Length: 461
Image (cartoon, rainbow, N blue to C red):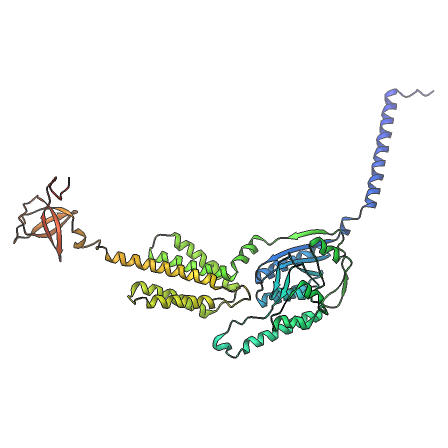
């Protein structure tokens, strides 16, 4: 006959059964929720990068980072929010080539309102898989600026060749993207610019649509069929997309600011002035250190920006003329020539990048400051030359000493002044050990007289 289980055994069994039922229900609920929610991998991803500045190698590096991030993460699209006054054509070609080779569609968005994508920015927008503008923006004016000028381009041949080459490049991009090649060439050859309404209203248009913001942009992109540069078509899915923003690195931010032509010019002039001040007053340290740093940063910027060697030589010649004005009494001729050379060199120092050239608003204050510093140093030099010599017999005039021997009108003697023994002559008799004062010097002979006794008129009290 079996014994009845004890009460505590029954309770343990009941609790175990209840726990198993709860665990089973929890697993079923999790499976149901997982079946209803879309997998994380199915959520579309859009990589967004924003660039505001001159187009140069630092800009090309940032765009490459943006597209590499989009390609590597399997993103649906890469969006470049662009604001630029223009830049270097070689860097523009680098950016366009990288956009064409990207595995994901590239969207160039000129935003926010009031922005522009001029010159090089126009070509970048033209090359995008999808070109979009915000209300109140404009693109265009892509005429190249020649740096030759003067004798090298007297008949305009160099400028015309550059313009025709750039116009052909713009037409190629426009035709590949099924955009208006005629207006693309006009933006180069005629420096035409277009508002968002004009760009969208052209036949065929220069852009795909107008978006008021990033959310509106993604909404209009969803379901759009995009034709890639090589002819393949891709349908974009951006509804509910997760936006990942890519910010420029601190290196790109700092170097991008230094590579601006105006900043590079200021660094060059400030560095030169700092070294001049240090050479004028050795040991002051601060101007030399600051000047050296500014010059090194300027040299880095000029490695990125194309520079005109004639402009550099004119700047150096102008500073040399200002320095010569300090040494040679030319009645201002050297100084005026130095200022003119500085202005001419400043205008020629960088090959003019459209809309970011070094203007008179920067050049004139900098040249004026350089002239003031140089002329101020010259004034200090003149004042120093007029002061009595700190060495030799001239420096002893007015000093007091002691007669070592008797000094008579026709009997020179010896005196001790500042611990040194000198030959001295006097119109009055001075006894040995008597205090005396130096009133003049002739060669190595001092002229002395008895020192004023204390409390006497003109004497020390």
